[in-house]
Length: 105
Image 1 (cartoon, rainbow, N blue to C red):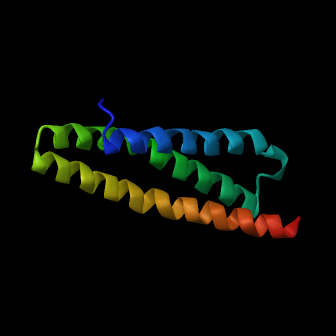
Image 2 (cartoon, rainbow, N blue to C red):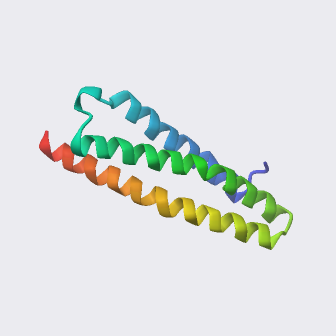
């Protein structure tokens, strides 16, 4: 892949959600896995899975754009939108739960 806007975006996004996943796994406390904490962990996992799943259509959209294939770009963009509709709210829920749990400490 050439150093396109998509390549730069992946260069930033992949390490970002990888760090979120690794730090989440590092900080997980299995003994606390109930209530708001469980919701935070599950929502965070869904957000990371959605972000990871988005890599495929993002790369396919980049390839379609390089071929000037507008229909392929639009098809992959719609798939990215669907995944984002599921993953972004999960990330927001995880973030809000984390803030709430931080105020309890």
